[in-house]
Amino acid sequence: MAPAPHGQNSSDSDALLRACWRIQDCGNCLRAADPCSWCPVSSTCVPNPSHLPLLAPCANPNICPLWYERYELRAKGTGCHVSTITFFTALGAVLVTVVLGGVGWAVGTGVRLGWRRWKGRREGWWRWREWGREWKRWRLGLVDLRREEREEREGRWLMG
Image (cartoon, rainbow, N blue to C red; front, side, top):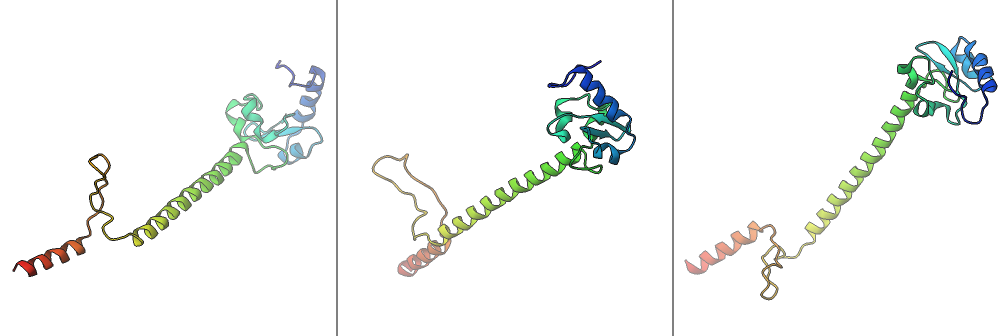
């Protein structure tokens, strides 16, 4: 026999097991006055004195008679149509949506600020720069082809 849950003695645990085990319907199990939950694969009402009944399978892998149905547990407060795995799926979907929304916002803000900076650039910002004799402190950027072509045409005009 499994030990009694924390805070309960063995006789209380046995009484709770008998009270829940005799119920044969999910709706009646979740409406019972005792802290019971429903395991749908084995169709059993099991005692669940956990403070968060829907999350009980995380702490107690033997909550249901069949081990593989533990995350299909139905608990009070959510009803017969919401299992632990359904709850985790919905929670994960919400968290992923929030994270992707934040990433999308950050990318959009970066593109918008980058575009403003690109439009507000001064002429000559992309040239090689040398500060003193230190060649380590230079930056390389894009070449403005229109200006290069203009300078080339002006040079040909003067030379030719």
